Length: 279
Image 1 (cartoon, helix red, strand yellow):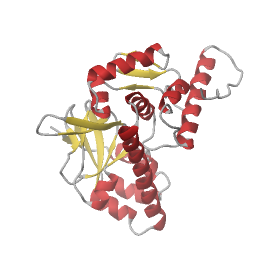
Image 2 (tube, helix red, strand yellow):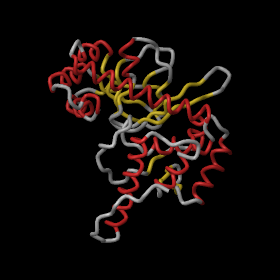
Image 3 (cartoon, one colour):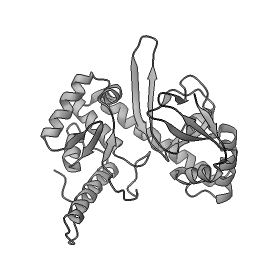
Image 4 (cartoon, one colour):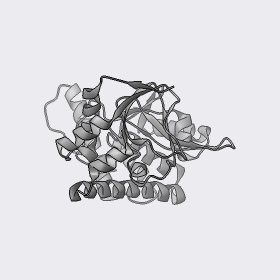
């Protein structure tokens, strides 16, 4: 059962400072949210927020990850994604006060900061800049959800899986080409059952597609972790049905360049690495 963690005000503030949405907000505004925020410890399988229940506020993970999913009485389950530390959860649901459409299920023991809805709304206030940031956040989420909907409706299973793998490798909640360098931007943990719930295909189908991508040199599996080893090959699969929008393509090409640069550094070379042309 979740338990409140006390005397961690510095950790709460540091966690909120990691959120892209709050990055350019005045320090005193973020401090006020941190003062209102509460730190909670959850065990694996617990829900940080629940479907059909009003959002407790804006939730930000300190560590660990959540499976965003929904289960029904008939035993069927769907999932949308896996979210990570620093990503804001329930922003729009806290803003409009309507029940959460999904559960946020802890995939391991973790800590999360919850800023109550009233305090988040007060932080936004009537400030034009912060309202604009909120609209931009909502717009980015709508575009992301629309892409997933279109691909699911008309795309091939292989293309849909490639797009999900590209999303799961992303270090930010929304698309940006200004993401900081990471030690390993490509490795992430996801089970075949979780991928099956996201893709709405049988686990066996997911396993077959994954094995094909392994043979093609797109990815390697390390237990429950996947590592993309060739982003341009992944990009080619993502575009088998239709071209993706330019900004996302730019990001994928940039990731491939980062990957090659990392390989060059490990090999002790000093020559600059130029992005390869998409295949």
